[in-house]
Length: 124
Image (tube, rainbow, N blue to C red; front, side, top):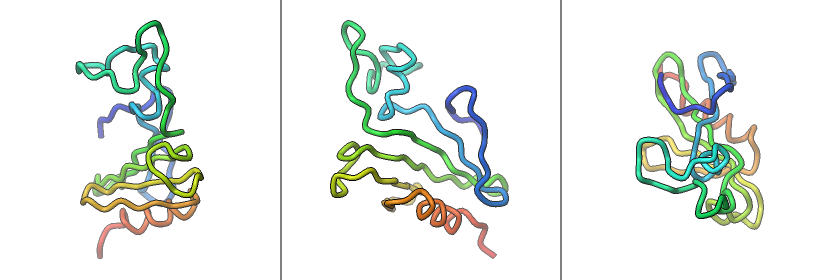
């Protein structure tokens, strides 16, 4: 599986064959942190440095890709700052997107990862 992962990070297994790794993303300020003014290979400057080296406040703490090694099914997850990628009572929250249009939010990483395991387990 080839993705744009954050360099020097590795897979972390949360269940047999279910792993995650942090990815480079505009809303985490990754590209600004790398000193870029455009996302590589695009003309998009989202989450990049502006003008004289300043950037917008990042909206998320981290953005991860979870997947099942056997099925390659994936789920995108991020941890939002309060009011960053949405409103949830002024608190940090996790959000997952499985690609089928459903978005789910969670107050705790353990709760989110339990749901991810349910979604990524192979159907019998």
